[in-house]
Length: 84
Image (cartoon, rainbow, N blue to C red):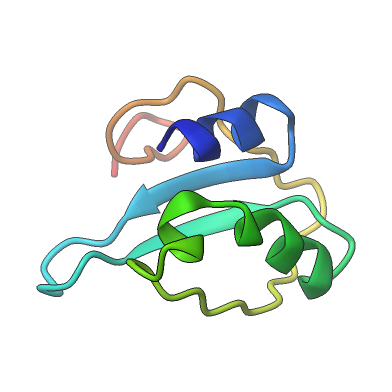
């Protein structure tokens, strides 16, 4: 987690979080990179990936124009009125 926090502080990782209820540890990381090779290079240095404890599966995601990452958010995302 410390490695991912450093990527977040450097602005290379936009957000991250675990998935619930799938048995195995799974999560989502959203990077700010030019391509998958750049994201792969960043994750190559993650101790859990390098040590074989986690498997990396990279997909390209196209974010809608104007989408902004939430900073310092805790808990589930809320709509504009504060409702889920």
